[in-house]
Amino acid sequence: MNRFLLFLIMLPAALWHGLGADVVQLKAILDTKLKLDDRKPLPIGRQQKQKKIKFGSLINAVMFLFMGVLYMMPIITVNDRIASLTIYFSMLTAIITFMLITDFSNVLFDSRDKYILFPRPINDRTLVLARLLHVVIYLVRVVFPLALPGWVALGYMDGWKSATLFTIPLLLLVFLALFLVNCIYLLILRLAKPEKFKDVINYFQVFTSVIFFASVYLFPRLFDRKNPTDFNILKYAWVRFTPSYWLASCWSWIGYPVAISGSAVYSGLAVVVPVACMFILVKYLTPSFASKIAGIDSADTGGYKPVQNGKRPGGLYKKLAYAFNVSDEARAGFIIAWLQTSRSRSFRMRVYPSFAFIPIYFYYTLTLGGESFSEVMSKLPDTSKHLFLLYFSSFVMVSALSYITMSDQYKAAWVYYATPVMVPGRIMIGAFKAMWVKFFLPFYILLAAFVLYIWGLPAILDVLLAVINVTMFICAIARINMRHLPFSIIEQTKQSGGRILKSMGAMFILGPLGAGHYFCVHLLWLKLLFIALSSVLLWLIWTSYANTTWASLVRSENEQ
Image (cartoon, rainbow, N blue to C red; front, side, top):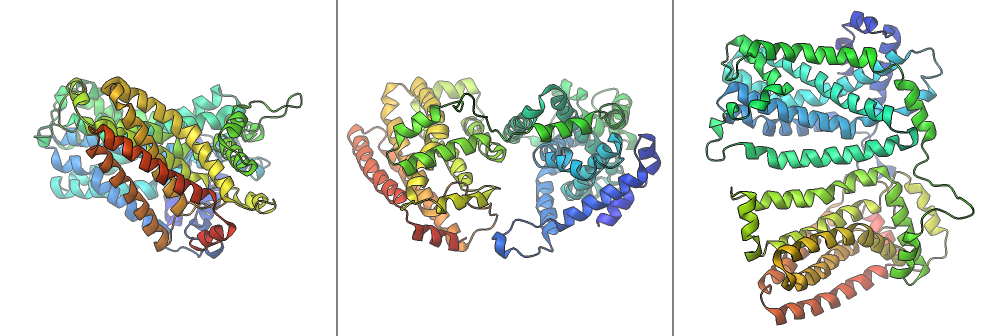
């Protein structure tokens, strides 16, 4: 498969030569990168028992194929072909751009190339073009199964002409996504200092993840839910300025009617703009690309701040560690978790978006009935929907705890076993407190302020009972399924059946807690009784988790 893709990508060798690349070197680099991709093991199961995976690419293709079935729905449901393809290409552009930003940045900015390629007589344009074409091949293996359902649907509904034409806009769409992502990265690369570049990219990836999540939930609101087939593109005149509409306008070539005049101009832009973008990207935007990437890797300090005048900068986390912990082991766990979560880019990428997911999803559930946002807000104080918001905040803490035990440098966990720690649970409970204070508490305070503003002071007992129940639920999750020292295990993508059942059992804890709170929301005495009972239960689970022994840790590792 890779050989065939390499053959196809090298067919326009004259074009690559005209862009300033050495064709022989370009082919050798691409061939090597594709071989390394095939030899890269999938992180399935335990690292020491990992077996060679033969069907990993097939599994990924099937996954993207199912995603493509979901994305092709506008083609089936909307009568106007140009409008349906505009929506389809918009969704396809969004997912491809999102994957480029989140998954392929290590390919676009792989600084490890400098150890092998930089000492060789390879010009910058060859190196950059090799990276871009590597991503193109990577995208082909993703885009083809993703677009296949839409391609088949067009061929079945519209005939062979529409199916044949589909390949041209699809290729142009990939060019646009590549240009967009690379321009953003190159702009950041030129503006940001080398030592800050990776942090800027990481925060940009988090922001993009949030935008993508919001668009998935809010974009369907453009449709008329009662008559989705009657989507009228004339109501959105601004759509004519979007590349997705330009690509859809190409169907005017085979006789499909276009509601917005000027289809010849827009379909011409669909061809000219992507080709011009790729030419500009390779020809003019990349002369200093390789040298700047080399500067990034050499300037990266991994978030470490040097000692100045015998004192390390900062100190708030130390004060909090002493304020929230009694034992030295718990303080050590608190400090380790606090510092590592600040320095780990992968942790930020995974956890930070959850802070935005909750308000977006809350807004989505509020407007499900079709009412305007002002109407919903006016009726909100008469409902008990604040309980949903308060209990849904547990998602932030669960997300943080899910990744606090994992690390790429998990072998450094030998330090735990080299210290005279009798009860490792104290380190774990210290790390738990760090996550609670650093991530959950500030976010919950903001939610509580919103709840008190809308529902008034009587809701303060709801805020108190909810925070106790949520903390108890999170502690139970940690007690049942996260008995590991901070940053001590490699990331797992496969869990044993026992661990899955335990996780599902723990998830059912939150339902009865929320239901009990809902039924006592207007009964003051019962609410006070639940606060007392939940506090006792929280203390019992908390104590059990804090008293985790080395034997319990061994049993948890054997369940991996």
